Length: 137
Image 1 (cartoon, helix red, strand yellow):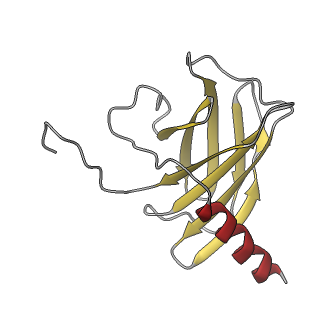
Image 2: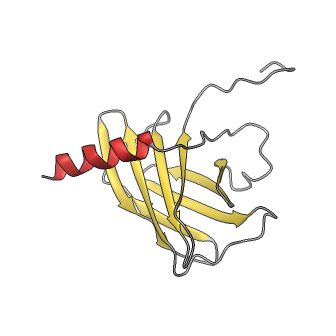
């Protein structure tokens, strides 16, 4: 049953339009993570071992109040998969922990719903090779 649920969630998450986050040159990645736009929001994902932390800001880079927000992360890390709840912390911070260390090339889909707003979703690809025109790495 649990495996069927994870497969269904993974299918849904990967079938939805999402943005792939880029780490390089993003002014919104102020905490050392990867940042991406999720609809009306800017989200930054920071991963350390088993802990995921998400910072949520508006388009003006002002912190969003996430105290009553609902958020979850679908993690695909090697052969490990999990769906975890991201719990609100301080003003614009949500965090959660997996049972396994998250690999540097993991794929993570974050869904965020603020009170009275529609759910926004973004896909982060950790360790993805970036394609940038006009300069070399």
